Amino acid sequence: MREIEFDVVVKAVKDMIMHCGTDLPQDTYDALKAAMEAEKSPVSKEVIRQILENANIAKDEKRPLCQDTGLAVFFVKVGEDVRIKGGLLRDAINKGTEEGYTEGYLRASTCEPFSRLNLKDTVGYNLPAIIHFDIVSGDKIDIEYAAKGGGSENVSRAKVLPPAAGKDGVVEFVKEVISDAGGNPCPPITVGVGIGGTFERAVISSKHALFRDLETTHEDPEMAELEERILTEINNLGIGAMGMGGTKTALAVHIESNPCHIASLPVSVNVQCHSSRHTHITI
Image 1: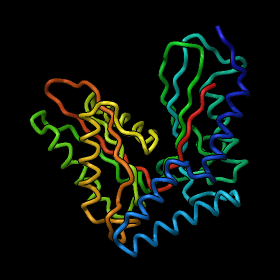
Image 2 (image 1 turned 90 degrees about the vertical axis):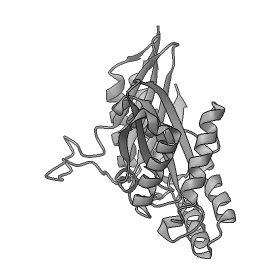
Image 3 (image 1 turned 30 degrees about the vertical axis):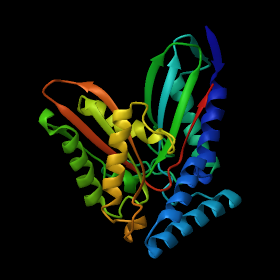
Image 4 (image 1 turned 60 degrees about the horizontal axis):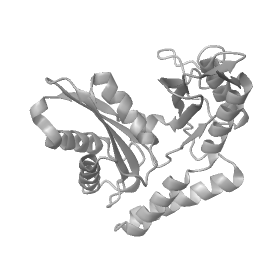
């Protein structure tokens, strides 16, 4: 059984958060640059240019990429032959989250749902982090992290379609969600689509789909074709960068599909803004 010190995890998580808060991932930067070059609307082209300029300034001056520094969302694969020495893995991730947001001068965005109070000892400092655990073989811990902003999260939706709706039904639902969202999620966006499973599996899958590098395509050719079809349909909506009108509303569409009940076709759409802050490490 391999042992990993509690503080090693804390520091790794803190470093991930501080890095992502100021440095736009290279895949996102490259996708935005390609979108700017391909954009037909002069207004949206200028908007994307300013987004890239903002990213450069944030990186050079170590300032937050956006005033919304998001909630800390993690997908964690834990090897069955590894244990944390000195504490619980969940506590280490939460401690790293608190230290990352505090030392990085990143805004704490969590609050009590109704009073809206941000209390240090309960839900302040972006605690608790949103953590999805999975047990896998091996003696390593793989941690995926993303900062999820409120504007993009607020437009996300899920629905259980009748099986007869098929691919066309999924495409129409995704288009409906993105059309209703308009400029609110700060496009150019990344769109995660979870298909199948149960209602909650589809939702979690759509969130996890946002963690994939933007330049990748689905390993299943059928799903890759569906991703491309949905991306084209979204960009044909004409929403454009920050809702200014244009041809580049989305940078990528990523799908995660799951087997589902014969009577159901769950589908979920989760949106990430142009500041797609994500990374992963393996310890």
